[in-house]
Amino acid sequence: MEPYVAGVLLAAGAGSRLGQPKATVEVRGEPLARRGVALLRDGGAQPIVVVTGAVAVDLPGVLVVHNPGWRSGMGSSLAAGLAMVPDSCGAAVIALVDQPLVGPEAVRRLIAAYRAGGRVVVAAYDGRPRNPVLIAREHWPEVTALAVGDAGARPFLRAHPALVTPVECGDTGSPDDVDTRADLARIEGLAGQRGSSTGRAGARDADTGGS
Image (tube, rainbow, N blue to C red):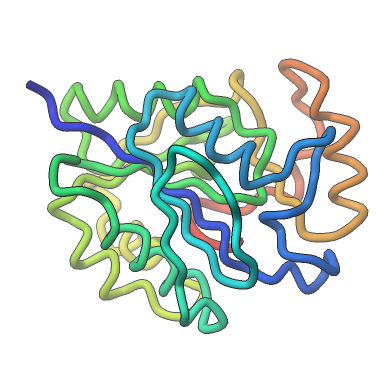
């Protein structure tokens, strides 16, 4: 039987530029944390681990882990999330709570690439690596060792480019970040549109962090 692929949602940040923790920010009436869980679950990841920090969240049917060191940056949240993944899982798809326009099809494609032999799989948009990212379990120790401060998995990805399998996901959604109120207003307008190709200038490169 193929090993399970977990989903890890990084949702620990305080959202200082937004004025509230990003996990609680709503897009079209739904909190970002809930949208992130749905993204991973609808994409085929199971179980789902949610890493919290600045604020607690009530999300049924998920594994919630509080990162007491969340102020140190996304690296500690990434480590806390991976440590919570059950041993039955051979890989994890890591997503960011502040990218609500990413589509579940992107998660499905990453998992399919893993099933086909990929060990580190990154969603790409118009050929540029973004998020989410899938990482096979054998690489987690090095990923977490290199994830210092706000770096997330980026140092590992840059150190091992030959391991990375990019999967084009530009037709599945957009990796736009919700960092400011202006971002939120723009993304609110895009959230109801399918297949939108606009507004990607603010998207963060693949780093599996930044909540």
